Every structure is written in structure tokens, then in C-alpha cells.
Length: 226
Image (tube, rainbow, N blue to C red; front, side):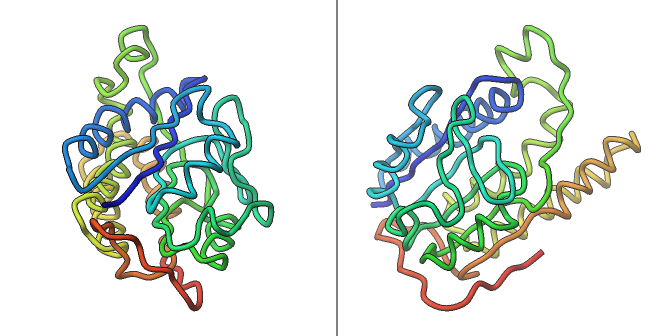
């Protein structure tokens, strides 16, 4: 059985949107699969101490939050992981997927060096447009503009949960971005879609995948595909 830590901060429009997409599509997928269990860190629970505890008992870490090149934050910008400032047991042998800005620059490679089995994230700011109104703040997945930006990472995350490998899930997301780019008429939106596609990276074992057993510890280098 695989245990998944799911990071779901929700305190501003970007985190509210992405967390609600994860709750809408990813959490039900985990709940209905008897081989998966989740530890959902939602809102104020998504802070350093609960995160530190839950990662030790998880095979997989998925989530969103504000980030920079060396840091992933949770609720109210509480630092969850910072390059060089965590116990390697928190990432050792784990498959990690972050939908957040820039964590693929320093934090992702650092997690791999400390034993993470696989990592997917972004090397630049993860940007998206949304039609902010009361209805969409309550039900963000109904926002047709935001869906263009937020469904590609949802598709790759679903692929990981369906047993696809690190590389297969990466390729699925790249194709999803490309589909949005190819069907988009607005040049400004197309540029942002291309920006997100080009900043996606995968690291670690390309054949790593989620299974009902424990993730294997990854030994070796830090292959990175851009």
C-alpha cells in the first residue's frame, strides 16, 4: 500500500485554485483506490511540523504551495522544505510532485541527492490566468480559463496514481500542455502556456512509479529532463 502526503494550502487565489483542483480530481482518485491512502494537509494543517511527521510515513508527496528555487511553503507561507535544512528521511525513497514555482531549480535536485526516488516540478514561476469571481472562488474547477493551466499537471498526477512511470507521467503532461497551446487562439495565454510547459522538469529514476508496495530507495545521480 502507498501512503500519499497531499499538501493543500488555501489562503490566497493561487493556492485556493490549485488546492481545489487537487481536491476535486486527485483526492477522490486516492480515496477510491484500495492500494492508496492519503494524509491530507489542508489549510492550517499544511505547516512544517505536520508535514515533517507525515512525510516519514509516506511513499509519495503531492501538492501545491508557493515556492522559490530553494523552498516549498504551505499555509500562510510556512516553510515546509528548504534546501539543505531537513532530515533526509523525509524524502528518502519517495516520489514527489510539486505544482509550485521554481522548486525544480535547487530544491528538487537537493531532494534527489538526499534519496528521493523521483521528482517533478517547475524551474520558473508557474503562471496561470483565472476569471476571478465569487462562483469561481467557490468552485475553481468551473473556471474555463484556469482549467487550461491547471489540468495539465492534474493529468500527469493522475497518471502517476494510475501506475505510470515518472517519465510516462512527464510525457503526458508535456502533451497536455501542447494540446492547450495548439488549440489556444489568445496569443498572451498561449505564451504563458508555453512558459509553463518549458519549465516542467523530471528528475531521479525515469522508471519510478507508485505501486501498492513501498517505493524503492533511489541510489545514484540526478538525471534531469527538461
